[in-house]
Amino acid sequence: MSDMVLIENNGGVLTLTLNRPDALNAFRPEMLEAMRDAIAGAGPDVRVAVIAGSGRAFSAGVDLKVLQGIEPKAGKIGDVFDKPSAEFGAAVRAAPFPVIAKVHGFCFTGALEIALHCDMIFTTVKTKFGDTHVKFGIRPTWGMTQNLPRAIGIRRSRELSFTARTLLGEEAAAIGLANAAVEDEAALNALVTERCEQIVANSQTAIAAMKDLYRLAEEGQGIEPSLTAELAREYPDIDDTVERLAGF
Image: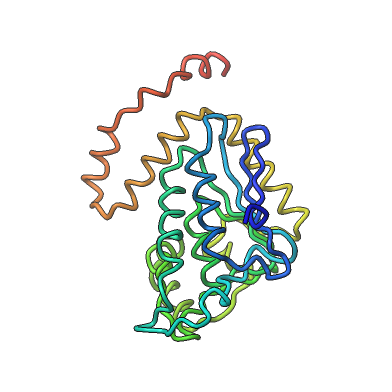
């Protein structure tokens, strides 16, 4: 199992590499569990995490072999993925550091749901994205209907989900599904490295507070209670303000 997700911590950057290239990094439950554990168990030296895929793709989605022999019912094929996928998403949201999805090649359905749990998505212009749930008569359970509209709006989300069409990275960036789309993998690696360096250079505790505050926008409150909550929350762990202002 350990070789399905390669884990490296270097200079404050925790890199999780999906490592089933022969299967286009199709997800098995153990992979979600490994990513969950790596993010939830990250030490205080981790400033940012990156999830990437080896070989030709980020991930083509779920490994259908895991679901063989399970009878579909009400648009679901068993529940073997539900708990680890939910716990992975919760670990990303609770992490005091940003989590970046570095996406190339293919990112379909379950893989897109995993990427959408992350704080940022960077990709290439030719990467293929799509939500194919309805193509196969399956309903989503990993967060597609909640996270996709938060990224691109409800109307675009409905279009992508109802049509199951494929879009390229260039369009993904244009509509806000991805933060940016660059020419090729070399440029993608360079961009993600640059963003990680920028994050590592900033106040770790302030970033943790900022991430927590951004979650207010996802809690379904109106603008007034959200603004009140933003003002009311305290972050005593931010202790490097004076030092950083002096450096400026």
